Structure formats: structure tokens, C-alpha cells
Image 1 (cartoon, rainbow, N blue to C red):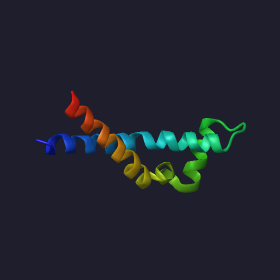
Image 2: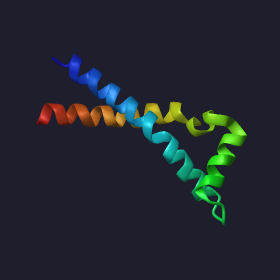
Image 3: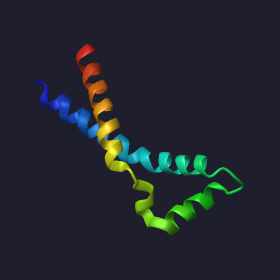
Length: 81
């Protein structure tokens, strides 16, 4: 009875982390380098330095941290509803 909700919560938390990480990464870079650079300039800079991987720097840590939190929240919601 707990396997399906657990697997669903894990999958949802992993997908939410992977889909939101590039945007959060861009926001972090923009906040760290305040100035006259545009969003496009920051995107080009990230791509130039690290390629597409640059948008996923720190994803492992985020998956562990946020993944656990979201999984627990979804499990609590599932059992309370």
C-alpha cells in the first residue's frame, strides 16, 4: 500500500528538481553578477563556459536535498488526504 505512493512521490520530486534546476541556476548566476548584462548574456556565458552541463551544476545535491523534502511532503499529503 505504500509502494505506489512512495514511487510516485520519488518520481515527482526527481522530475520537479530536474525541470526547475536550470532556471534556478540562471537566477543564481544573475543574482551573483548584478550589472548591465541581460538574461541572454548570462545564458550565453553559462553555455560558453560549461555548455549545457552548466545549467545542471549542483543537480546531485539538489536531488538529495529537495528530492527528500518533496518526497516526504507528497507522502504526508497522500496519507492525510
